[in-house]
Amino acid sequence: MGLAVIGGIASFGVAELIQASSLLYEGLRWAGTLFLLYLAWEGWTAGTDVVSSSGDPGGKYFMRGLVTNLLNPKAAIFYVAVLPTFVEAGRPVLAQTTLLTVVYVVIATAIHGMIVVLAGTLEPFLNDPRRERISRRLLSALLALVALWFAWSTAR
Image (tube, rainbow, N blue to C red; front, side, top):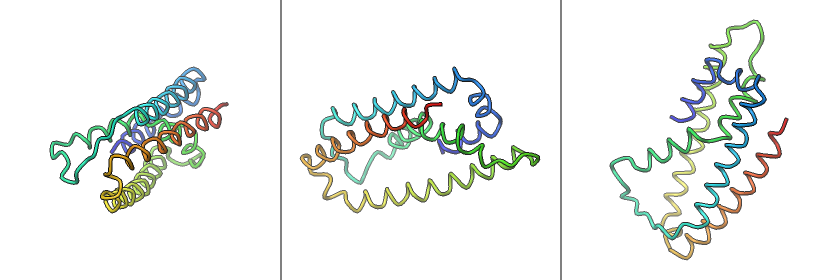
């Protein structure tokens, strides 16, 4: 849902405005880098939080995922820097960007669905507090590396 919202906003020209403004682009780029570093820090310092598959029926995890997706710098940069390169001049921009957004969201949803299924399969293994701490630390270190790569690779 977060990717669809970001894509919808980008389809209406916000991506073009950000791309045209160095200040907005750099602000988004550094905000994204800092957000990724924050997530890495949060994952590194968090205690074990073994989660049962019964979960929270109130949607707490859905809302956290939605907010994280809306603030996802990788998605925002994709819509600002990559998606416009697939738009053909002389054809309706809104129709093209909407179609590209739908395709992107469908592919991302399928990939995220596979990750959820894999995580569900690995739940008994990962819900050991010691293993959870090791996996949190490993994934946090990788996320910090992604943040640094993101800052380097998106520089103009």
